[in-house]
Figure 1 (cartoon, rainbow, N blue to C red):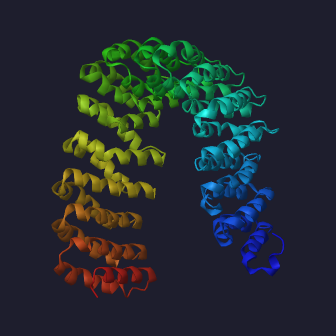
Figure 2: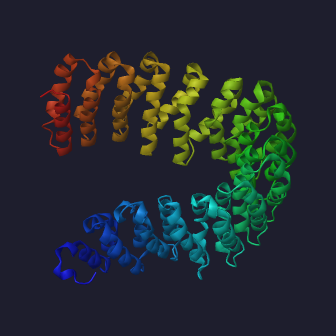
Figure 3: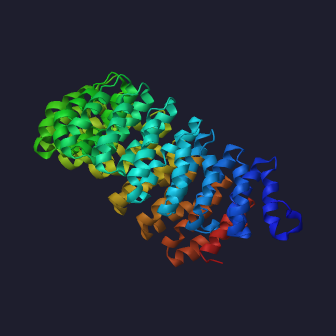
Length: 594
């Protein structure tokens, strides 16, 4: 790097050095993001001999700079001369894999995993394996945690002749050591990568070595390690033949499902569907059904909520020949208890999936056993529970139709529609077209139409906007004739409202409805109202008139455009307000009325 003053070709690297040494972090960050450009300017040889050593020596910077560097180096293979020289990228990435900040280390490991695929088997043994060994035996826990993520990419690429002698004897010893490391962070990292590592090993090694590591990690004194072993359990169970699962995996899984730490039990509940698929139908019937019952009755609400979330998936994956019996005998009693759980998160989690049971159990069981639960949840004090039931009504509609729920449904919808939290009101608006389709036009007009119109004058803009979109979807569902008789007169009536925001909502509704209602309704009923509003005292209303005329213009016929729309836009184009003039001129231009 010395002697840059006398050589113009070194100017880019001189700029890089200056910026990397600058006190401004943003300048340093920008220079790192330009590394590929600088490498191209230098050429592959000087990138290898000058740029990379320089970067390796200067890895003492702000975390965001190091993060950008770790990401850049993962895409540097061609800039150092291709796969033949990719090992030159290992020293800076090795240094980055040992820094204190976790996100930097993770990104360095990600880049190392990426470039490992570009090493030839020989280069992998000569350059990459030693790096993994150095990281695995480093003095600082940071390097040892990073090493855990590299074993699974290293082993499959090593040539089979050296797999046993070079890898299994040496690197497996390192991985075993990491699994029993004194530092919990390292054991956590090893546990999180155990399943991934198992997937690339021969079955014999999984049985002889990985199972014992899995058992040890699942019994670790730290619950943060034990819960990660549950994730590994899924991968390991999918690799083993059915006859080995009972002896090698199930004792550990049973232990995890009853762990003293709720976090471990939570992880079992969260991964339950994956575990169920991995162990197969027989073990599910004998072992997982009782375990699932216990999780649904767990003393910790977080565990019950996680298990409740899996009820539908668990029931769907049960063996067909005994599915209904298991659900009715073992699962449904627990579900009934959860409907009246003291914790609202548990009830909400259950409400989001319980409707799905109706398609599994069929019409008769739904009417007899599930319908009372749905009705109870529709009356729940928690808005989220009621909302989750309403959002999944289509499942029940397929099986028993929605009429049986309609009497309880209406009070729940009304309460949610008037909820103090605007996000709850917004959510129920989004489900209104679905409800309308299921309840039919008569029920809708009688019970829900007033609600939909009330949302148009809500004090929150997001609600008024959603209500406008809702009207458009309803017109698409029920047709233009329904709109003409039911919706359009009410919308147009708002044009005379003393509140200018409500008058503007009329324009927004016309924008949305014009296409769905068609030319005749738009020309005869909507257009006269829009034209009249061009004389509004509020400038915001007038410029929205111009925008509305631009929007509905394509729906109108050419004579209406020329005789009615054009004079109004020309008048607005001379308005005293700058915004009104701008939007009027834009509308004239777009509609080609000039």
